[in-house]
Image 1 (cartoon, rainbow, N blue to C red):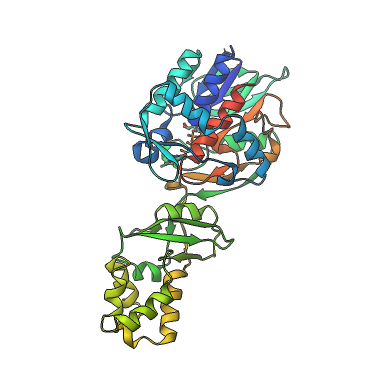
Image 2 (tube, helix red, strand yellow; image 1 turned 45 degrees about the horizontal axis):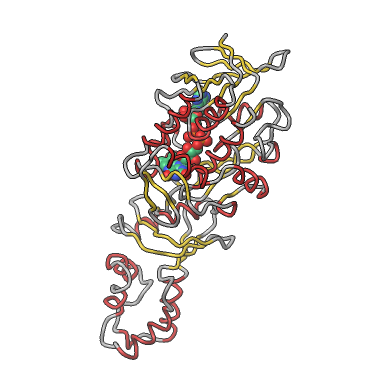
Length: 395
Ligand code: FDA
């Protein structure tokens, strides 16, 4: 039996941050992971450059049943604290868009920073150790059985992530431990994930794969994101679609404004008046990708005629098509390609200051295994750093 003060399940973003902090407090810390490398999701994130935080991160950028929980979680270790950490390590990084910070070189730089911190803090890392079982003995110690060892500890931190990307070692172990100790779980589903389309829509948009359009996308509950949408051979993706997927529920439609900066009806009236000989197809082709306009014409969403032949009714219909285009996905690509898991350990079961389970002393849940889900744009890593740091001060 290997004896530690703290055992952390999961050498991802949250677990590594927590391990270093706890180690600095003089705790004997083990971090166990089933993978053969630490920080595997960090390494593939942001196209290999890791969007490690967002300069503008605030509680409004997160979904959580209890908004106060997120507020408290983020307040003790913010994006500014993480930026200060990477600056201290001399990381080269850049601002891309909407406050998103990326490594200049490689996501490996972030893993190296975290591993340096863990080394300085004396953390022991056990890779290729799949956690199979957790129990609590009569003295209140947690006994963790992995595929290789048995550990005992006074503090057990569950940082095992969500269900996304099973190929990268996602397992439901965190949820199982939560259930075992009587904690409530909120239903889980894939989020920040591309939509798949019904066959008839797939046929309509065949040939559009690779086209990207700056759009304003609105969900049923009125949530809006202004970023690109991207047609793929399976359906719809792109940042605006990934963002709205977290707010979409099966059976609902999303509304897409393809020309959010244009008063389309006014513009069509103007064309009718001043550029009447030109075809609607050619005129729209100045504003939207030509292949996309062709698809709208082919399925009769937009008439192919000179602008001066448009009726008032047709102008209204075209304006509605382009500014409130209704798409009803038939589903999402699921956990295979999703960036995060919505739902998880109910925040009401945890202290927002320490992440300790209210029902089990010494048991903590941090990072994606909890129900907190950030928007796309560095917010999810920020929550992993914030929750890992806060837990590391006490566990
Ligand atoms: P994480 O999933 O990172 O780590 C959990 C660890 O637990 C894993 O290493 C796993 O092997 C281990 N584990 C699970 N079960 C186990 C068991 N039974 N035994 C032992 N170990 C076990 N976010 C962001 O802010 N910016 C970005 O650029 C991106 N990009 C991105 C791209 C892609 C493709 C994905 C899939 C995700 C992102 N994300 C992101 C989301 C981000 O990666 C995610 O929110 C964090 O990695 C969550 O960190 P955690 O430490 O909570 O879990």
